Length: 219
Image 1 (spheres, helix red, strand yellow):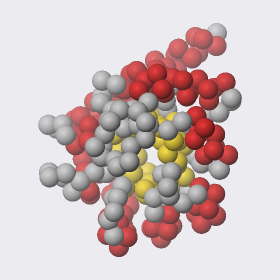
Image 2 (cartoon, rainbow, N blue to C red):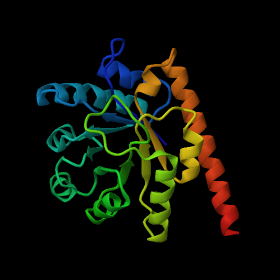
Image 3 (cartoon, rainbow, N blue to C red):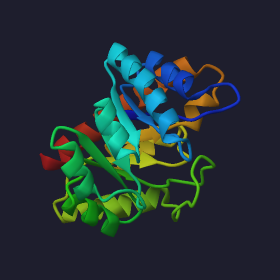
């Protein structure tokens, strides 16, 4: 699974950034507009809601639980300093997706106990798209954390995030993640639409290899 996190550049505004990802086949968009006024986030979310509906994609709102509810979007992603997931669940109900950001195994345990639906685990490496970056994990960090999850019977979907390139994807999928979240890697390419298609192919083929390996290990 590929998640695209909206990002504004000199070439692409927030809505256009999401559009190129959708045109490339991405089915999961996270609207992330740090420090923007809530009115602007709502207006942008309203447009993206229609766009995602057109492409059959999921729209997740970063941080803003009330905006998610007002837009009737598919769900919300909560950072470590955002609303508590249990409080968000009271507001959004059981039909909405709630994701949470984690940097350690202990973070994951806490979020699982609070009822989140998926984990955004990172950062993989340094990225300029996020302030106050947590410690870098690298491939070994993902392997160690996911191994701990398996030993504890934690099977929640884990999405890798933070400075990931398409060349990193097979290694991250092999480490056991369920999906990849990207932003600049897509928008900085010469042809973002074709690049998105290529990345989705890499994710899907890596996922198939991982599934086959798991079946062989069980056998």
